[in-house]
Length: 169
Image (cartoon, rainbow, N blue to C red; front, side, top):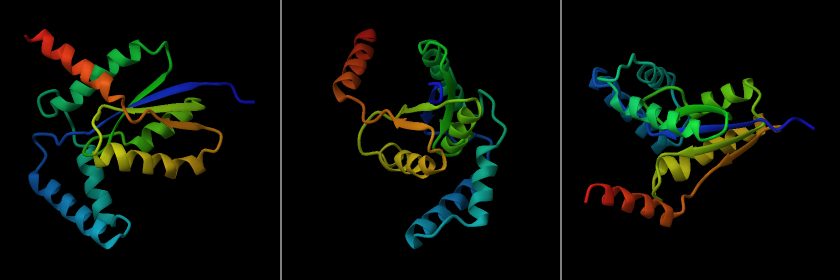
């Protein structure tokens, strides 16, 4: 029996760098919409645009969202008793969830829990895309348990928001 090696991936939405040309994003979104409507796999052009935007150089000034997620990730990682840890993004930023899963497996993870910063029900990333990605990855890694820590307990989310309101009241 394989040793239990835990990993955690924090998934954020991802942001468009402020200095990335808007025409790249517009073209990517147009190609994505056409693909989804036609129920086709991504075209080579779509994959290249997606990769270009995800790998765009970033700084705190050009992508404050990435820097914010990395800060949250550092706090979370410090609370998880040394588990393998990675950050991933749904769109516009690297690494992808697939890349982060593969990296943790390369590091020896046998049980990976994926958690997102998107707390509320109804979002396509949290309710559809992340589960689909994990469902796609599971057959490729039968010896690895991939869990998705979803949905959030809405009472816990409301309590966190209430505490935040009290901080500013």
